[in-house]
Image (cartoon, rainbow, N blue to C red; front, side):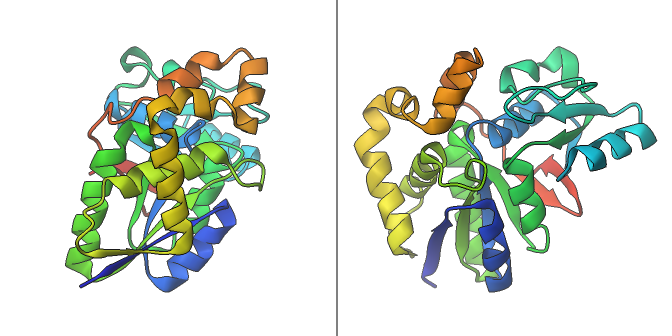
Length: 241
C-alpha cells in the first residue's frame, strides 16, 4: 500500500490525526521530545506526561518515589526535581526511575494524541530510528503517518518543522505519498541540513533559550541520530519499544 505522510503544525492538531487513525509521531525538538528520548536512553523506567502543573504535582504527591520534571517559561517549576533540559537527565539521576513530565507544548501534544493506537516520540536525536519504526508499523497495520509538531506556545515552530523534514527524509520513497506540508518540511530540511545548528538558532524558541542561558540544550538537541531508541506512548505512559 501507499502510505500517506502528513505533518501538522500545532499540538492541538494531534486530535485530527488521531481521528484519521494515523500513526502519530510527536515532535518537540526544544526540548520535550529530546528530553524524553535522552531519559529513556539513560535507563529511565517510564515517563508519564502531565498536561498541567497541578496534575503533575498531584501525581508526584501520590507517588513520592517518582521524579518530577518539566518547565514553564523554559524554567524548572518550584519544587521540581528536574527541568526540561535533556542534559539534566543523566544515567545517575534517572536510571530505573519513573518520571512525571509536564511542559508547555510537548506534553500537551502527547495528551492530545492519547486516543491514537500508535503514538511515538521523535526528535532529531532519533530521526532514523523513528522513521524506520514508523514505516514498519504503518505498513503492517495499513495506516498512514502524521508527524505532530508541538509548536511553541500555540504557534508554529521552525525547529519542529525542520525535524519533521529530517524524519521524512529517512522514510523510504518507494511507498509513501507526502502531503504538501510534509513536502515543504522535507524541502526545508534539505536546505538547512548542512548548517542545522545555525538554522535552528534562528528560531524564536532558540532565541528565548539562549537568553535563559540554555544554548547547550540547543546544541545537544541538534544532533541527528544520536540514539536508536523509539519511545512509545500508550495507556498514559511512555516506554521504549
